[in-house]
Length: 139
Image (cartoon, rainbow, N blue to C red; front, side, top):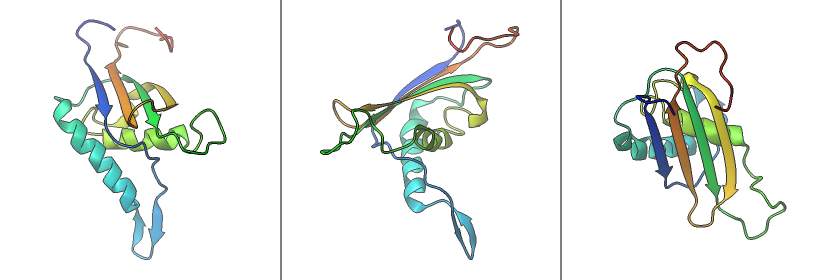
């Protein structure tokens, strides 16, 4: 990582949960309450750990350490899609770890069965793209 570039590493002690689809009612569209509570829990936990939202382009890595079910069909966590899991975390960290999740230019998302308690580990790094014309995905 380049000098003077900021980063955060966060271990979030929550059970990973995918973002649910918006619901439509007579009164309009709304986010399901379980998703709202989950995102708020992540936001409230991370807010004191992030001194200020990071600026500029970002690289993130999100590791979801999932609960291992008693009966499993696969040797890997297959119940939740990686994109729905990461969307909930990215939306929860808006205005906390970054100003808007559209700043994320490189993302690595991984799912594991937890060896201990389920949790989420997030690493966020600022990228230095000021003078680079071509940036490799892996530096």
